[in-house]
Length: 279
Figure 1 (cartoon, rainbow, N blue to C red):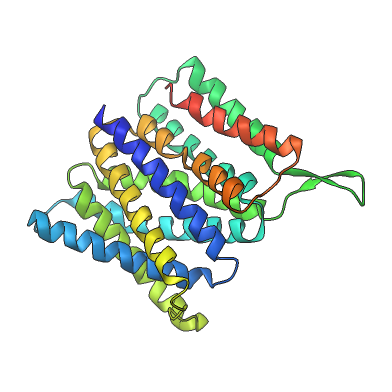
Figure 2 (cartoon, rainbow, N blue to C red):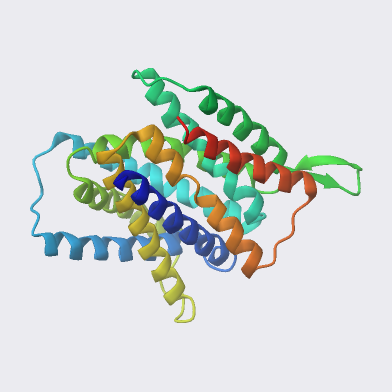
């Protein structure tokens, strides 16, 4: 029960963080947003480690947290850019379909795929294709919605993040989260320098971005602990329902409207991911 509960917390944390990240990326450099949120996350994890009085363990599996951090930050960059240029309620569910990768990974290592899970994968793929199609009134035909390539790239990397992070957090999930966050900072720092982006984004934006960093960190820690105690195929799927939170926030707060075929696709994508959780 604990892995499922923590996975639900991860779902809400990532959903809120993605909404803020996508919204703020429309007016601020995405790299700057990621840098500030990563610094916030590192600070929070440092406090947790100090309170737990937990020294760095001698665990070779923690090395998996390094690529997990690199993969995760690139996935977030692609997702936030897609949400900045396209419709959140359409593109956010696309990134969730990356959960198919850890499910396949589990099968490769001996997990048994249920009929519902197989159906869920098919529905999620169909829903994703429908969600990214929109009517072009000028040419009277359907076209791919803007930002779909970025969202698809993010989905692919999200799947690998789940796999690598699951390996890293087998015994020490908190330290795995910290190392993952530090590796993200290692790639973000030189990128900020060479692109000449600044972390001075103004006081009006700072509170929400700090909240985003806190939510993202909370979600990452919850996922790490859940993965260390439960099955990756179950934990990853439940955690990847975060687009539902992003969709609700984008609809309520920004008033986004989507076409009927796209709405049907979003519903199918989320339904597909939900069915996969029956694995």
